Amino acid sequence: SYMRQDASVECYTEKHDGITDLALGFIVLWPVGSLVLFTSLLAACYKPLQAKSPNALTRATAFLHREYEKTWYWWEAVELARKLVLTGFVLLIPEKNAFLRLVVATLICSCYAVVLAVVRPYKRVEDNVLAVATSLALLLLFLGTNWTTIFLGIEERYQGADPADVLGFSSLTGLVNSMIALVGAVLIFFLIGAIFAARRVAKLPTFRLVSTKQLPELTLAHGLKWHLFNSHIWST
Image 1 (cartoon, one colour):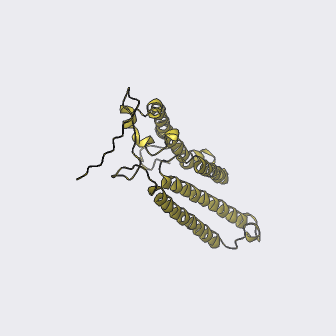
Image 2: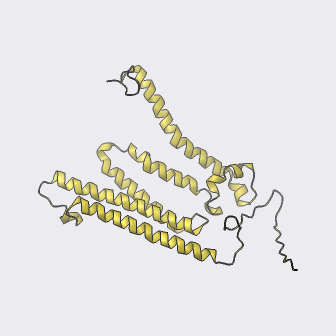
Image 3: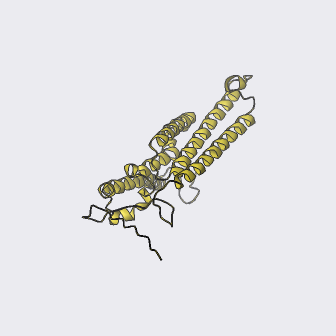
């Protein structure tokens, strides 16, 4: 057999092994390297962010931490790790144990959704609500996939057995439609909740920027300790 992309390379030869090793190296370098890089950058930003004294590094890496509370400024690294595990690392489990992949992914989604709801790392209320909603939706999708796999496994391995005796669904279509409806209901519910939460927060008597409608980021230059607020009304 030969490589699909280059028919001049025969599989399982020395040349093919060299290409395979190089490809595996880049596959590992990209996910692991990006996680290590982002984590290192966030660790280097700890002191200036906690002191509210931005420097060149914190400004350059603002895309990693500006959406999060100061206490949870490193949450982007956790989010990236979750994505890498769900989309890549679970595939390290042998394909013969495909159901174990779903179980691991479901457990990760469950733990992440609970932690996310407890810590609420985002600055904006609506972001926290939508993050929990999407996590629950993903969890429901994995649960639906688990039940679908069990349904098909019962039909294939136990001739004459009725999956409805175990799962309560007599057909796969009914199972899939039920999960789709449940996911849609969860998303609609949390979307409405996010809208109401955003409107409630917007009505609080706080100082907000006209451009973004958000609270201003009060930072201090190096060596300074205090802010000055000067309020004045011009009368005619």
